[in-house]
Length: 101
Image 1: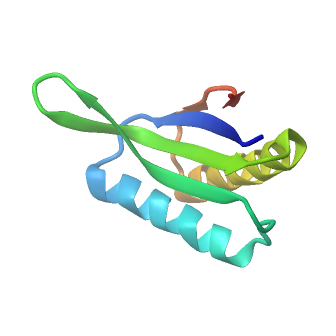
Image 2 (image 1 turned 90 degrees about the vertical axis):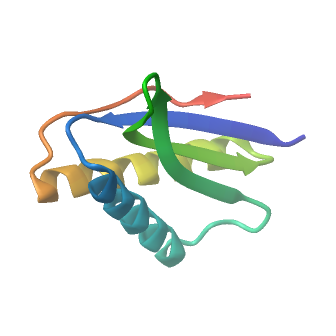
Image 3 (image 1 turned 90 degrees about the horizontal axis):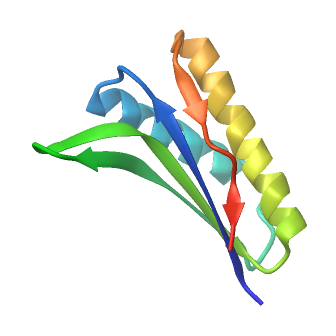
């Protein structure tokens, strides 16, 4: 049975191009990581829409059959987000707990 995880990470005060950079860094990180066959990771910008679209941060979705592998991969991506934020001096970041369905 296939499971899908989702984690939202809010990064306050960043411009659209800065969130683009964060997404690119995470995608580059994933290219170097060994991702088990049959698993996929999607990373994209998270937006809020009210009077237009405003970027909030990033979303990470992982799809695969084993919840343990999904959780492990999610933790590695989460650690990379924290590392990038610390390296770039991004003070406010909040990642919600991962949910697996």
